[in-house]
Amino acid sequence: MPELPEVETVARGLATVLPGRRIAAVRLGKTDFISDPAVLQASLPGCQIAAVRRYGKFLLFDLLPSNGAGRSGTLLVHLGMTGQLVVQPAAAPVAPHTHALLTLDDGRQLRYTDVRRFGRLALVSAEDLRASLAALGPDPLELSAAEFCTRLGRRRARIKSVLLDQRTLRGLGNIYVDESLWRAQIHPTEQAARLGPARLKRLYRAIRHILREAIRWRGSSIANYRDAAGAPGGYQQRHCVYGREGKPCLRCRAKIRRVLVAGRSSHYCPRCQRIPRRRQKAPSAVSRLAH
Ligand SMILES: [Zn+2]
Image (cartoon, rainbow, N blue to C red):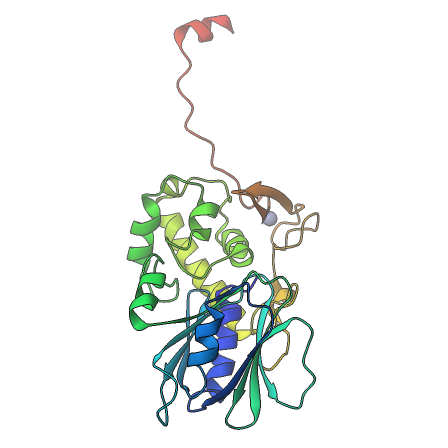
């Protein structure tokens, strides 16, 4: 499933080709994942794409009316599990499961392909956009270490679920949470509030390092992820723990394990990512006598 680095890679790719282009025509396939397809079909033609940006795992296309057609608003896209957005010449063969084709004024097409259709497409007003995104937490690449420690330090849930919760931080998913926890040597089931400032800071640095590296390698292609030019990412070859169950830890050679945390598969090293032993209560006089 595309996470922050993959969506950032797609956004950067599209931002080099789309701004300034006008949408000439729209063709839709299956529309069960599109909010109000009729509005999309009626309002997109004529719109000029002013900017492409990422917000958490969302792609946002800011639109302006041009030549008296189209309307201002934002096309909001979530790639779900298997969504792909690629710019291709209109004459290129259309891949199976392509459900939206936006023909641009330069003859190319922006194509949305999604095998499983867990993605989302919606044309929203500025007001609706604010409402849709209001619940999302800060971007891990934009917040300070102090803010990170405050936000996470008061949460009693397990650190893995806290990091996956988009209301705490936006953009992280299973792959980069596992990689970050391994790098910071923190067990996925440990309670966030028990980590303390030193380990929270280590986690903060780990998350930002992993995300920046993953963006540099243009994301991870596990299943269908492709960048805006249709090319796979390269970071999957650099995973230290995700998808490496049973293989030796790259730090200590112990076998990587997989457990379910919050319903998600979590990969960790049982030696590097130990839960610190809880402080034991002093044995009572009776139990001391019993030994
Ligand atoms: Zn290890």
